Length: 257
Length: 188
Ligand SMILES: Nc1ncnc2c1ncn2[C@@H]1O[C@H](COP(=O)(O)OP(=O)(O)O)[C@@H](O)[C@H]1O
Ligand SMILES: [Mg+2]
Image 1: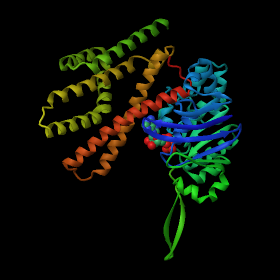
Image 2 (image 1 turned 90 degrees about the horizontal axis):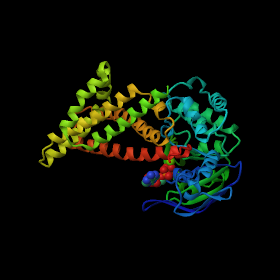
Image 3 (image 1 turned 60 degrees about the vertical axis):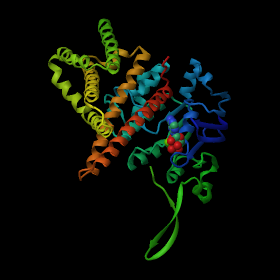
Image 4 (image 1 turned 30 degrees about the vertical axis):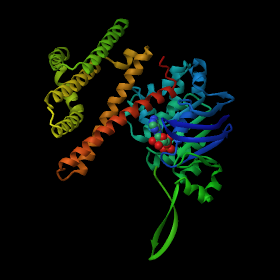
């Protein structure tokens, strides 16, 4: 379904993705791991057809996703309703006067029918029905995240890309989110730097190193035993603790989210 | 209904033209002359809008002004004219924005003109983002500066704040337009 072939990306001179190749099949649930600045967000933006790699190719269902492809109106509409992205910062996605309008926005752009039913259905599923008339700016981080999720899931996409979905929400909402996510029947790619959360969000792990290369692609369980890759990606670090006066050496997990 | 829409559109176009003029003219007298005009148009809402305007820009203007004054004094330059100019300009632009918002339902007025709403949404989001950032910075400034900062610290703080706002605003605009693209916004 998704196919990256030797993809590299540069912001000006700075290389932020280096020769990445991978395939993702329908209904696969992948977790994209890497420390801050490793290129996760950039990769998701490429997969969402927002920016285009300077080297290599990205194909979705056999079609090359290029600037030219996206500039065609029909292609654009089809692709945008099939592949959706939850941005790292929900504030960037919010720009409508009410929650209702926010959820309905994409449907209107795409000229769908039954907008009202769809909006209400997803507002219900995401527990934000009571906020439909509220301006989304005034909501808490967790609620904003739900509004953003509703506004992209309402399009009934095939692929859901999530960029650090728990970075702006509290632990209770994180718990809720994991349960909600589990019930979705979609192809998903979730970016995170929290490896303890990763296990809850998928079966396949894709790891970007700090020098922007793909250093691991395989089962998440096996990844957790692969201390070398985790260290290299700066997802864990080694340091010394003292317990009851005895010194231990530990591998340590970061909780940055 | 139809007539209302037309009126809103005209007001909106007028607003954009004025904003462009305000942000590009370097004439203090012109910028000052706008103020009585604002009083006239806003009528009994004047003080309400004035309050909003002053609150939302006082911190930003203070930082810009103080940093500019410090830099000018260090370089032996005259700063008065520039300070008056920039403060007036930001004041005019902000006041005008709130004035428009009090007269027109901005989103309704542009709902069928995609290019326009694109511009508007961008600036609207920016205003909100800025407000948030001012607040954060005000708090961090207070919490980290229980003791009076010396000149150099002050200068560094102002400089980094300024650079932060600048980069942040560029990054945010890029990110917002990507998010809009992602959500099928056709700005063509
Ligand atoms: N719009 C941009 N312009 C220039 N550099 C950028 C931009 N966005 C991200 N970067 C840089 O690219 C690198 C990778 O960023 P990103 O993809 O956001 O990483 P991650 O999501 O893994 O934290 C970082 O060094 C970041 O500073
Ligand atoms: Mg990121």
